[in-house]
Length: 594
Image (cartoon, rainbow, N blue to C red; front, side, top):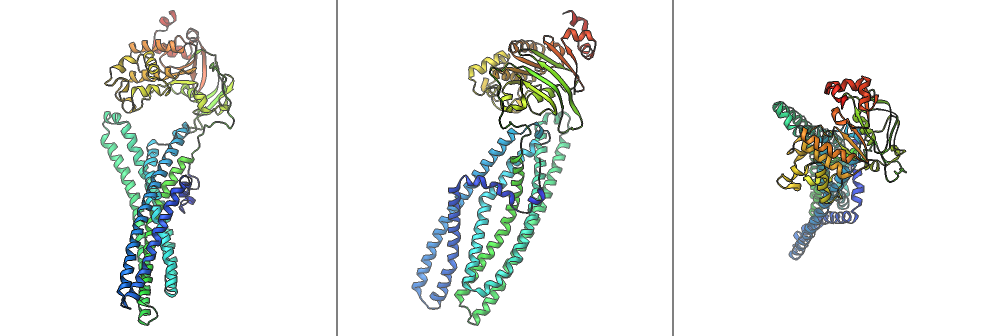
């Protein structure tokens, strides 16, 4: 994930500005929150005025009626303050929940658009950590923390203004101390944010490690590595704790430093004010009023020091989420995409195509590959592991773009197409069947969510999966567990084939589609695939050569190049790479005689 100008961005709360578009969607609620926030602060600032009048007029002039009336006013003020505070709380918490919900949706939506190049290096556990822990931090900031920050800012500013009105002389002493308070808060806030970001990164590492361990728990247990994995996770968690401890220590020191400075200045002002009262320069009520405003200002400053640290943490979270939100897919639709003519016939052409994976820029995956597949033709691709077979599928689906050369479908270069429209033309059966933690019906309907139950059942029967699905506890509504853990490898493969049948695309991509099946199931599914391939362009990756004897052509790849091309019999007679592969798998003489 790219981190442009990270150090510069850490110097302020600037990443939180990325949340403005989300807040602007709810202007009326923001306005309501601000109104009640200001009302609560203004109501609080009226209390010292009443206190001054009670002391100077009520007590010293012995006016019980005035005392009663002012305490009645104080009760009314407390009622207004209660309503304003409750309303402020409701609106700001609502905004926090709403903004985070919108942010999560947008980040996840962008994640679904990012291509293979991004996921080649990103860790799923870290991404999940950003979607959960970081958004929770932002929810707190947009809600309670930002509200407290605004409240303390308004209250502190209002208190300073009223202090100036009450006693300009004493106010100058307080105002002179403000830079000594604010500047260290800002400086320490940067350190808090930097260390909070580091703690969040370490926590994401721990989450990523845990996610990987849980997803491969059977392998872990089979190799009896549970204790080692547990120790590694404990070490990672300890690193996260240590990073968090440093952030907490910095925040604690910041809070203590701010409180000492703030209340030291209040005590100094109170001492000077007390002498002014003794010398009749101030009335006791005026000193009481000033003291209350000074306490309000001091409390607001101390509160700001705490929420500044929390906002700094939220800024780190916003920065991490912004990285995901602004990440651009390497494969994107052109501004004016071309469209394929209907119906798509599946005429595929590779013209001098070369490609190397972004993570291995110096290693060519395929080199100067050229071939053509006619509409309705079945072409198999074979070769040793690492020869570049699966790379052809990735390039066809535009998970990556070719480094050199051109790939076209029905005469249209695929780079000129919207990737979504391009991928709609393919039905894929991967070697490792992906089964989602939902019902059998939904897993098959993944090929076409608009399909009816009857269409899903028909596709399932065509893949010879209907029999075992009907034996499940709830039939098609049975939850299959994460990654289809409750199914055998062959059952998962047949579900993947049913999904491809349901999509009914003009081009089939079969990557070892029968590799996980037993002999009986393989025969049944191969018959289904033979029927499915009729009238469709089909590209097959195969290691088991017995599954491709009926292919119209076979491409033999070696070290990223097409080394041989022809029918099974023609390639056997050449006695090259294909003949060597065939000899390893079955009796060449017997196959030739068929």
